[in-house]
Length: 495
Ligand SMILES: *Cc1c(COP(=O)(O)O)cnc(C)c1O
Image 1: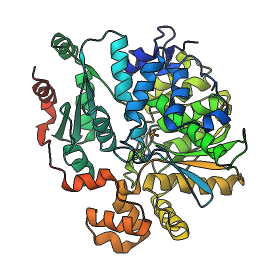
Image 2: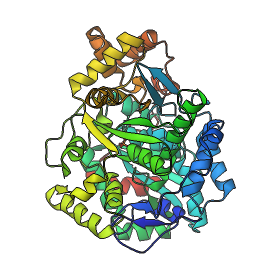
Image 3: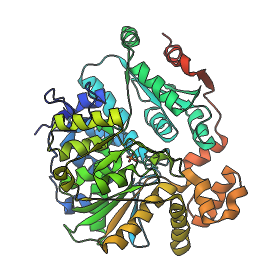
Image 4: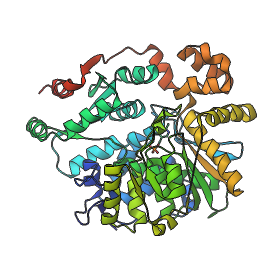
């Protein structure tokens, strides 16, 4: 049965999956949600014998119903290939009473690769289906991680170009090096004099520029976005929860149908929302544990029913979770209103105007499947240290937040269910924080020296993503003022 997509903010105007992927965001500012959540149509036993790609097909076919089998299989084959450093794609590692689901074996060693490896292919197929003749120009502002993962995903994908703006002095040296060494004839990376907000506002203005859009169209181009609210990013993220469950079954760690808990280090609420969808599809998940860092808006929300972004923004050692507005939470809010776009819109308007909203008691009662908590900077560092001391396993700062919150959850509830922790980045991506947490003696080492030291103590080979940037030549040295972004784009496109 076909599944259409609704906006979270208005009734009617349903679109097909391919249209939702092309648009990214609905015109009314809402997010696209499937009109109903499909149920898995294969048994866990059958799924447990499948490869990652086969599992991906079984999950994605249920959501992307206007894609043919061949189209979907082709997208999957192009995404989950040797860009990943293991055939398992998302291996499970058992340590200290939890199963770490390593989502960082792709090109940029963070979990964004899981979705951004396939999004470009879903997007080009969607363009074909909808008779889009223009070349698609992906425009992104990045504070570091998303930009590189999007570049890697779109590099040399036929029919697309990708332009990334980053704050020239606002990303880590490793992040900058990762971006400016990006290969691919359709890639373009620009540092701007300004901060991340300047880059993001510039991109937003360009997206809203109707004159520019008309001119681009005349020249055979149109903009699109690789933002995490695109359902083309959400759906591929459901896959690895199904994969993890069925692999635990295959390994005999759980009985068929046994409930597990899932812990997710959360920022924009995309990854944990995918786990929520997996649960709605029939995957036996009991608690969804939402882990925050010191920017604990979500912890407060689950505790009080009030979402309040009016607070100080804290820079932490888990920067990909430094977020005060979790965009994907809107989808959960919409679902707990009983899929009522009017009620959801009211709350989202309150958030926009006053920075906060409070949900009803009835809505709160539908959040009983969630548990929220947070980890301080000190607790996060202690967790990295402690886990390494006890087991030799090294985790990154984001995963450490989750691991720490898992400990708090067990202490609070005494719940002993088998638990999967989403491990969202390789420790090699945040080497400095990780190594300093393990031993303060590492503080004086340089970035690449630290990578060597990490390899020594963990016994894990330095990933290609890090080896490459040691020697890779700089291919992008464009810098501009924040007022010149439009011109940089037209120059790159040669129009
Ligand atoms: C993006 C990111 C997160 C947060 O994921 P959301 O889907 O935004 O909640 C956590 N950890 C890492 C390493 C990330 O890159």
